Image 1: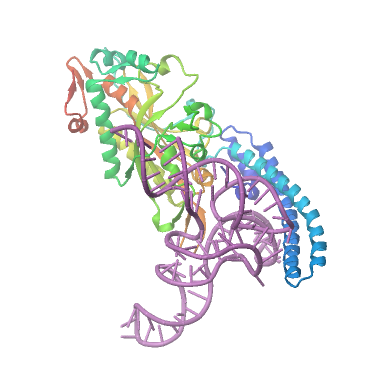
Image 2: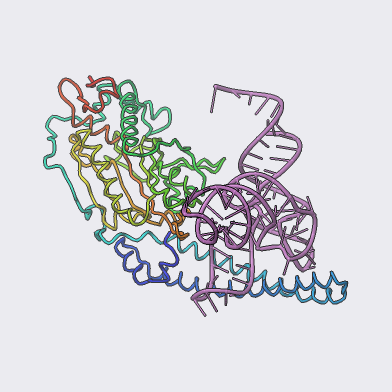
Length: 422
RNA sequence: GGAGAGAUGGCAGAGUGGUUGAUUGCAGCGGUCUUGAAAACCGCCUUGGGUAACACCAACGGGGGUUCGAAUCCCUCUCUCUCCGCCA
C-alpha cells in the first residue's frame, strides 16, 4: 500500500510511475485526494462536536457536585442533540475511511526508476546469462527420467490428491531432503536465522504481504477456520513483523525458512504444468529481510548475487532478469528473476524471484523502526526464493543425465549420500 | 470439547461511573552533583488522527450497547492462564 502522504505530495509522479506498470492511476489518485480532503473535513467537524460534548459533560459533573440538579438537567438536553449529530458524523467518517482504504489498496507499488517499461515477459531485461546452453541432443525430459529411476510417482499423487501433488520416492525423496538442507545451511552460513512458521495463515497475514484481497483465488482456503494455506513462506515470515516497532539498531533482520507452498494455479495448462514445471504443492526455502531504506537496494543486489551463487554451486546454467513493469508483481518495486535452463525441454524455468517491496508491505503491516532521535519510519521488506525445489530438480535431472545415470553436483553429495541416480 | 479466572503504557502493577491518558515501581532518556562512575536529587518518557504550529479528538485486547459522562456497568468475539476430557 502506498503511503497517503506520498500521494498528497506528488500525485503526478505516482500517475507517471505507475504507467510503467501499465496501470492507469489517474482516476483513482484523483478520487483518493478528493476523499482524503473530505475525510479530514468530517474529522474536523466530528472533533469539534465531541469537544463540545466533553465540555458539557464536565460542566454537568461540576453542577451535580455542587447540588445544582435542575441546571444539570438542562445541560443534559443540550448534549442529546449533539450526540445525534456526532453519531451521524461518525458514520460518515467510517464510510469515508473505508472508501479511502479500499482505493488505496488498489494501487500497485511504484516501480523503481531502473525498472524498464514493458508489457510482458518478452520485455524483461537480461542482465546475466551463461554463455553456452547445454545441448538437447538425446536428452529425455525430467518426467521420463523420474519414471525411469522411480523418483517421482505422479500417478499416485493424482490418486491421493490430484494433479500437481507429486509423490516423491526413494532417491527422489532423498534428493528433496538434501536440497532443503543444503539451501538452509547456506542461508545460515550467510547470516540468516532459520524459522519454522505455520503454513496456514489468517486473513490479516494475507493482507499484510499483499496476497489479499487481490489474489484470493490463488490460495487454498480452509473455510471451517478461515485459514489460507501459504503460497510462499514470505507470508508468515514477513508477518512476524506485523505491528512491530523495531529499534534502528535491530536492523537488518535476516530470516530464512523452509516450507511447503500451496498454489491453486487456476487457469494453467499444457506444457507449463507438465511434470515438475508447475505444481500445486512444492517445497521452497525462502530468505526474508527487513532493512533500512538507505540500504535496501544494495541488499537486493546482494540477495540476487547470493541466489546466483547457489545456482553456481549446483552447476546449473542460469540467467538473471530484471523484470519489466508489466511483468512485475503488484507489491514489488523491483524484481530479479533467476531462471535455470532445462536442456531437454529447451526452455528457461524460473526458480527464484528476488524483490524489494520498499514500504509497500511495511505500510500494510505497520512495520516501522525508530531511530535514536525518536523518528519513526517504515522499514523496507525484501524477499527471495533460495530456492524453489521442483524446477531445480527438473534441471538437475535433465542437464546431468548420462548413459550411466544422473550425476549430481558435488555440493549435494554429503547431503544425498549418493553421487548418481541410477 | 467442558468449567472457571483474566486481558491496563517497554515490563511490573494500581485504578469499579465525573479534570484518570491513566497512581506507583522498574527499565530508558536528559540534567544537577562527581576527576570519572555509582548513589542521591530534578525533569522527560504511549500511540494514532488533526494543525504551519497550537488547539482539539480518539485509544485501557477487538466490536457493539447503557449513560449528560465509562478503563470502570451490560452484550459479544478473540486471546491467555488454571482444572477436567482427548491426543502426537
